[in-house]
Length: 327
Ligand code: NAX
Image 1: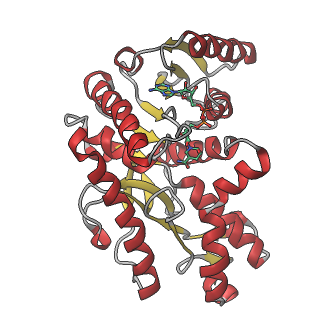
Image 2: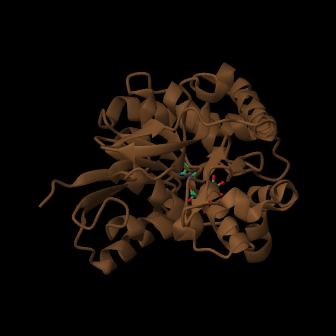
């Protein structure tokens, strides 16, 4: 049987953690033949650590054959030791009266410390996915704080936006999500993201031709996908958790096991493609194989798309500038 791999998850006692850990332990992320050791991180706070112990009791009670080890941690320096996969879910939420700058600064502190800990302790091949918001900028900070690790090991989660876009397009066209290919989401995981179905196909037909309605695109589709998180909070009284965990599983599974030529969206450090400055953590269409992703290059960008890309890029470069003095 395969050698176990180490999977670190931060925010492990949170809502996304609760929807995520059981699926990792059952083999849905890395395959039904891949044993895993979970390295679970929470803040050192007594209440959080106690809640984490409760989640671990439930994990034990599932008797997952692939779960061959489990650890609780309150410090990333020990929590990330030798880790092969790191899912950084825990983050500082915006509290009442907290300004955006305060939120950025509080998270910069967390992701600087976690980036440094990964740099020091993790496997040199560690695959890092940042889920905690602001996800792109947190991933950028972690990457910049881990100079001895390859920059391409750091990614941010745009997959929930990607999956939301797929389901909206399937509903609009009366097709199945699983039949839609070549969806793209550009930019920041925020309402400025640009979900772009210009290249998408379903059953060999162009989605753009099936929809053929630019007003729907600009006035219905993009706001629906962009504000979906808020719509879920409004309906459920809680933020997206199961769908976020599902997107994290999709992201890591595809990165680890490959997409067989299918396009998916990942937030990855730019190499300068599409005019996005180097290192900006940006949603791009990628394919993956052998544990590596490759950005799809050379897609035509029309005027509408360029405007949307500029807007989401501006938001990201502003966030980056807002934390520059902290790095
Ligand atoms: P919860 O508040 O339920 O859980 C977060 C957990 O993280 C808490 O238990 C907290 O103690 C822990 N935590 C905080 N700082 C930590 C640190 N430095 N080290 C370890 N653990 C730490 O939030 P949840 O609903 O699980 O959401 C987690 C994060 O995901 C939030 O930042 C949220 O905004 C973000 N999201 C990102 C999405 C994306 O698509 N990228 C979508 C869903 C979600 O909104």
